[in-house]
Image (tube, rainbow, N blue to C red; front, side):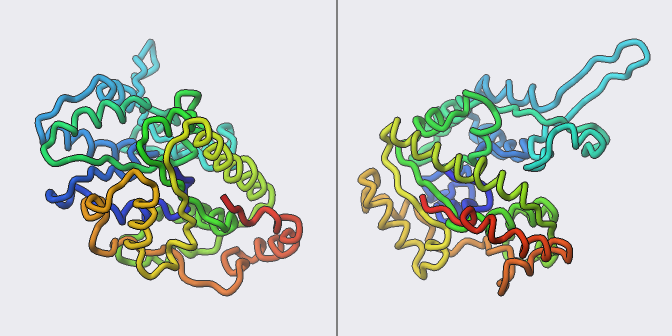
Length: 315
């Protein structure tokens, strides 16, 4: 359970993955319900490669991925790709009417093509693959916040045998990271640092306060309540502590064993031996204002006293 820009991709990369190592017993789905749904096809192709059944929920997903409108009169027929991530945080839908993205010449619309039971259906099918015993995925909190009651935290968590809560102590770092990723469209770094990720960004006190209170703190507080309701075994990883730990594999192994769900004989099946290729995206900085453009630096310094109490969170 995680919000975006909290190191969740880096964390999940420390687990084994059957897709890249057939000796592994883990299907590591990373972000199973992706915000760019085309990425979901790697799971569909996995089912096909192993001659497994394509569940009805997956067929429904494929039908919902493209919105088709029949032509009438002088109006031509229209196709619209689904792309939930085209709605930037902090902007209303009406603001996007004149900046609609296109892909392959077709308009993109903001809807959510998945259903939660797709996890059950997928796990039922991959359990037929000899040797596969574990399924891990990360759930990004924005799904539960934006896409209706079906995605309530309690319903998501209730499907798990063990829950890892991943969060970042610095809300300000998370907000800056999100702003940089949206501006650069660089969401993850694999092996190579990309300088454009650290281009100067704008600062908005209004958007930060809204993000910190209505998105970040509110989401993790709901996760707490959902874990209390479901009574699921869980442990918490703070991003800053995790990246500072020199032996991350042992750090994770200890937490898994302490959960009481995982046995010592299972650790090697769950955790990767090699360090992930994913790297930290941004370069070190001395001051937060180094991230902002000239106008933003002045505004940030003026606003900092008012927002300082919202810049950190302890789960």
